[in-house]
Length: 182
Image (tube, rainbow, N blue to C red; front, side, top):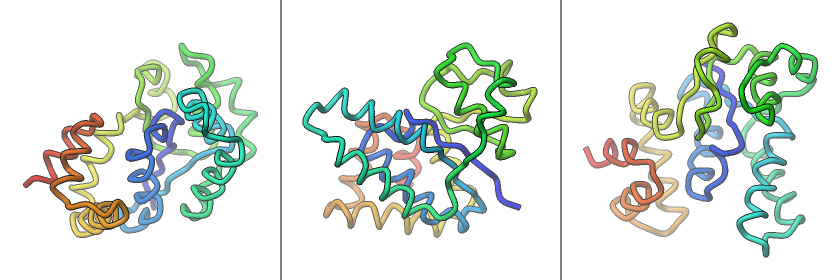
């Protein structure tokens, strides 16, 4: 049985973090994970990118969504809308994320905010993990696969592991980067 994780849009916002999270999705079975998203989560991520980068076109957003869905096998949660009415969370804009997690029987939500609190998640057997914590936990799940993932990321960026590690720290993935230095 796989540990199922729903990615929130904010966990997919920054290009580097998104790239690593998608690579985790590509290699999800090596970590005994099943990564999950919805069209609504991806639309929210694209909207945030377009807000920050006005030159990012709608076509680029569609291409990005399509690439994510193509890269991560069997990741799309559908028909979760009936679960929205039982999702109680302080930020109503995040109800769809919680509903997708409930509907898919996920165990965790990877999110870069504090809206997913214990009071909202515990009744559904869910936990929230910040992106840095989620990626750091991969070290315990499968160190060789984690190393392969990081090597692929560095290679795709045409950079060294040391430079990638420095960039990860700059982008707030501090614990993950510190583990890479070991």
